[in-house]
Image (cartoon, rainbow, N blue to C red; front, side, top):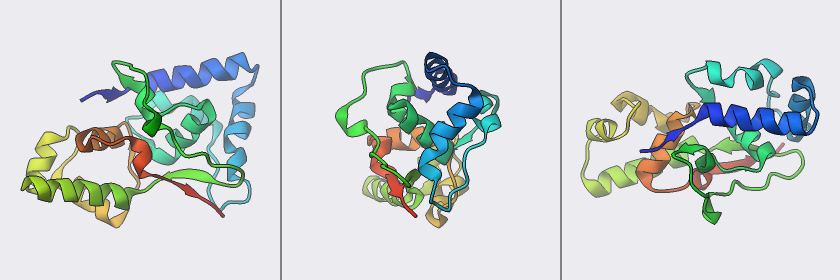
Length: 169
């Protein structure tokens, strides 16, 4: 499986920020613009600046950064390759943000698990960074972060965009 490169995401964010002549605070304002009029909590400057210092970054943060960059999650997998059309994230438009549909992801994993006749323990052995409990807990819709989510989508053979929804007010 290919690994989601958080350092490359941070570098792309910083490169666009620098090219536009923005401070980190101004970058946060631009990334958070779609949050206006939604109940979602805006992304802080410290979160944007410190993504590489964390083991996992919530999908809500990464998806909004990717939307601002106009990039797909798969474009940050190593080794890099050109993203496919089906990997494009949905266009959010104003007052909408991207969210990972954890329940849909769980259901897809469960369908494949059942089709292959696997136990949850066997699935966990096949997907690095997941335990049996982490997989079954997805059914209750907990937050899941990057890079972990990308291991699931790769195991499923589906683009991350298949599990991304647009959230409105």
